Image (cartoon, rainbow, N blue to C red; front, side, top):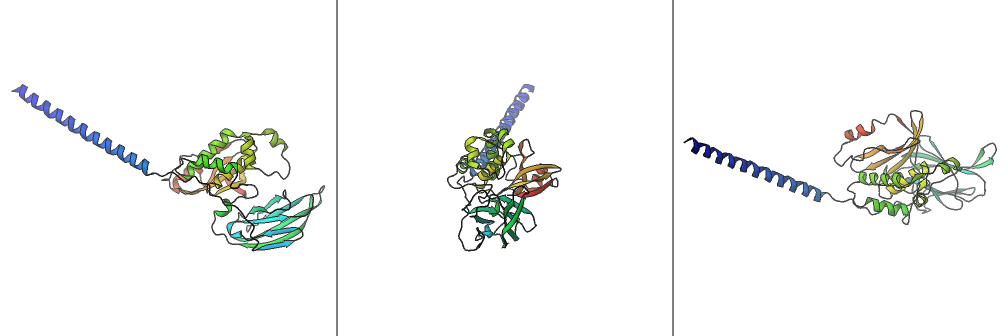
Length: 317
């Protein structure tokens, strides 16, 4: 009798174990199927270049004393200036609505050059200064013009090619960015890929840094080709590559405490503006955690970047 009962219980036990095993397998299969379907449903990001290139349309122009300004596209966040004089040292100054002065050396003559309007909506003042005494660093105003600006949106000034961040459809940096953006699922993936490529392939040029001349303008393609550069080259190349992928990118210069500092802020679809995502502390570049994903909310992003109170922006390009 006892043997029969024991046999009966053993059968029940085996059936129970079989039942549990079957259910577990079903859950595993369903779980794997769900994971696979989620993976399949996640679409790759389009890596085609999205280029915002400036143009001179001559619809709104100002001219005086060898200076021509095309203000046809202020709503897109830029103006174009052509200096055709012969002065040895000339500066262009763009004063934003908050009275911040952006000063650029004139390094190109007899051609229109693009200058950004990074200060948002409001009245900008465009001033061209010619040297009158090089030894005393004295300048005289040869052109001035106020321009009222109303942007189509806040991102455009940080998408266009400009004086310090130059690129076009034939640029090597544009093609490289497209290559790096393939197989990316998000803008943040592109930021991570571009950053990692640059720090692994571009070497810092100490000799160039020690001998950089007044009026130096970075060339993203030259940096990519030479695989060397100074911090300005790194920043310009990074911005050019990201902008060519339709990612609004700011090159910002200012202070963190008492340290003069440069950093890059990007707008990504997943989270909006991420400030200080790539920063340069005078010695090294660093990237904030690249694992910030599509499901992260703004409050989650803040734990990586803080509240931004330590960063004081002086210039934005």
